[in-house]
Amino acid sequence: MRYGRAASSAELFSSPLLRQLHAQACVLARLDKIVAERLTLLKSACRVAAYKDGTLTLSTSNSALAGQIRYMQAGLLGNLRQCPEFSALQQIRVINCEPAPVKKTVRQPLPPLSFSTGNLLREAAELVDDAELSEAFRRLASHASDKPTE
Image (cartoon, rainbow, N blue to C red; front, side):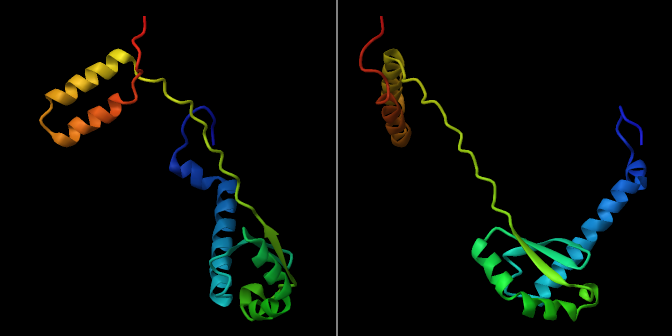
């Protein structure tokens, strides 16, 4: 694959790294589906994060559920080992992946409407025949400054 230009789809799919990542993603998706089928209580709250060297790593954002999974680990191991994909399963590891906190954007307050803008809005409210629109103009004009600027 060359750098400096857009790669064609044929070049992308012939990349060994991309094929390996795709294969791993497919395996994890299949294992996630199996875990959801076998452990119906957990299917909505945890996901398969990895399966390597006989260790199944589950991720959850619920720390209470993580504790329950650790407590029930022996029974879960027996249940999952019945499936051919998990025949070599030795342990279940649970990681707690707290969702990243969402930063709230702090917006500066808008500057107040000028006195002249308030007057124009009041005049528009008088000229408009629609009662709702007229009332909206009046409410907006109420936010205008009471004193003329010099």
